[in-house]
Image (cartoon, rainbow, N blue to C red; front, side, top):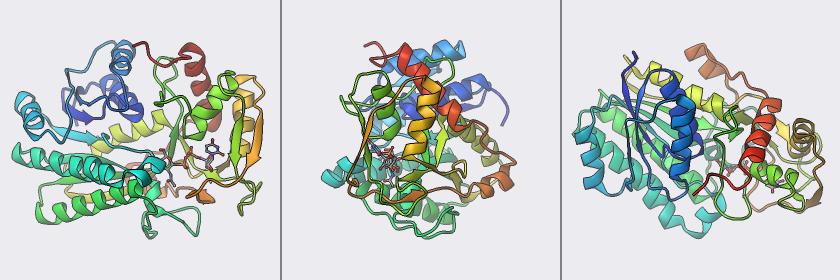
Length: 343
Ligand code: UD1
């Protein structure tokens, strides 16, 4: 896709969305952001503009479920393609609030599809998750392995994939790429952009580790050491957020001239245990990270690792940033922004 292509990024102020905005702006795309700031802040977009040395064309603070406001965004801008990140993503919360998850994640996606259809926009990159594989019985996972979501968050992503696949069957001009991310971590190498989880205690291991390393939390709880893995702790496929962002930019290039839906894993193919991650973060940060082994976290699975070969074959593209870069970039962001973005 040539430069001066306009991409609508929903959830553009979020962790993955903001890094993808930088990647798109750096590659000559114009970007229109839609975000309701329910789990993000305008500060992230100020940083995006600083890094890319130009801002998004426009930022619209709207909820995707506000159909009239969404339609106005499409009226106002000539949108060539859409990247849809905006969604709720906390697994634990989804068990407590399933209706909110279906409403925001599935309803938001159908509202977006409706607006795209009404305005003749046919290209979409959709943010899905490895959590749709559920209790995977093998690693690594290919796109053909069966889905078995085990919580409303994962089910909402799986339902979106079904809606998109079926819509593509009936609307032949539609071109959709579904990217199932494994565990995105890391930060922009400038130290200006990173992950700013809401609340005092992060749910995910990487932001938690960073706060322990910075002395803002006393110690890491390692959730279980009796899994059938090399050292007994949970194994995940951590992928640098800049590789995730790059993957979206490359995906856009592959939407042109295609139609129908394709699904790809976005991971590195490397499994890392919690204890290996702790060791890597200690090396990268030069700190010592206290931890204790506690019981398993309900709903956790032993190991989730991508087979990333399908995307490599289709796009001639692979991730390039390793675990050391992920830890170093998180640590730089943590040190430069101990309290996240300024209000
Ligand atoms: C989960 C979701 C994923 C979602 C992601 C971000 C599943 C299977 N995965 O990933 O889809 O995108 O959250 O919201 O539902 N751990 C500790 N101590 C901690 C925190 C985590 O030991 O304080 C361990 C976990 O047990 C796990 C690993 O670290 O083995 C990664 O956990 P986490 O960062 O929370 O991500 P997932 O649960 O894999």
